[in-house]
Length: 431
Image (cartoon, rainbow, N blue to C red):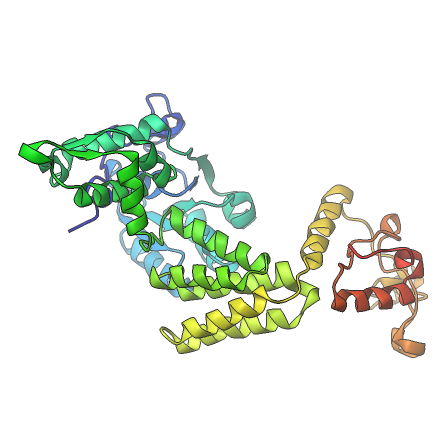
């Protein structure tokens, strides 16, 4: 039997709940759909607000072929196969097929690049769905070819409507006699996610006992809490809990708690989470949160990722556990993360500052006459393999971007920097 959320998935805009600013009577997306001139676009919003459902409704309403890919388990080969199939569906003036890509922010640059030609020449109309800001996660070339529509979290009235609708219209739930005495706990556990709300509702109704003499099943906050906690191992790897648990897992390691790290790892493993997804997050964490305090952390995290790919389940859970414990108990530093953020901010503020003349490449005689590369000092010709000279643009000559933090490894780094760059680091203290 399909989950309740699937059984109740609407098939028309009139049955779609929420997002009135987009699909209401005067909503911008509804007007676009009704015009038939559908551009490629990206739906940006939190989990469970109807991104996939909306894409399917649009396809059905416009009678267009619909192809769907998930960025979690699709590669460039899968994209090319779908695009080839879409090309074969084009006849004369037939409408463009729709290519829906769930979690498009998980696609690499090369995967996103592979979509450009098909979007630009009209092979497909792309609809992407993402929970992350597309300005940061979608490559500019693809983003410039797409509209972006922002979906809002469902309001309390939307969630209450869904509960009532499910109880009255679902082929299984409407056979039950149910009284919702209190709904605060139901709404809280849903986290504003319609899919999760409906799945929790189905669980609660199934667990409730019929009252005496045919009286209704009574559902209150206390019963919801007890039932959910008794089924706490439930793990919706495509919904809100997916994001909550990976978040607390990463925060546990960042906070140096190996016990919590392994516990939340076990929750994900038991819930069937993609182990490569966990390993990728550990690689990011090793660079962002441990960094130069222990450079071996990134090596181990990368080895973990490769090993998980090689070994597979169930043995790879041991590799993940070892890595999570190592990272949680390692000294921490986010100095490299802060440095690149600072540097990018400087670039945006100061623009394209010129490269100092001594540092410029001089492959032609004219460039040499213009003093390109003049006065450059080859470091290995000097004692200690160091010669003080200016590599930064003139306007930023003494600017510090990297600030070492207070751990044994970076204390040693700071000592070297003070020896080499007295003017810049002579009075620097550990962050």
